[in-house]
Image (spheres, rainbow over the protein chains, first blue to last red):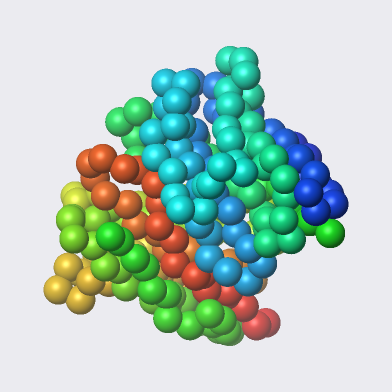
Length: 113
Length: 114
């Protein structure tokens, strides 16, 4: 069964460093999402991406964040200058047009020290 | 704006007992509702969804949920808990048109006692 994959599973970085989180969505899906879950809190929407552009973003997704689909398979989330409060589990999700359910990857745990 | 409230951050049941996880939503438009499950160190897996068809929705692993518009609820139930049901459960809402991002509740951790 096709699934969303994410790498790395765990990333430790120092405050102020740039990080890139990688996702490979399900191959025929066209909508892509990033969510995050700070430890002990709810899952929060960050950004959605369709047709090579951002279709929606939340207040969390400020200028420090960017997304890219550099090729036909990867979908990345970049944080330019990480802050302690960026420590969280980051989930990638994808879905097909006309289908409601989003399929989630296993997540990348980002720890900023 | 949409929101989801899950009452009870932790629920503990005995194996074989009824599971009831509560979810109430707020939405200015007819909602589409989902339950996701998260097993330890894994991603979110879709259990079931409500999309304005039948109000009683059956999902995987014996779970079901009933959409009650008058109560703005979408509670998740399972008649008989199994040890393997121990996980975190998230209720989520989205709107049927426009933005498709999910708004999640804070989650309920289900413990199943032998």
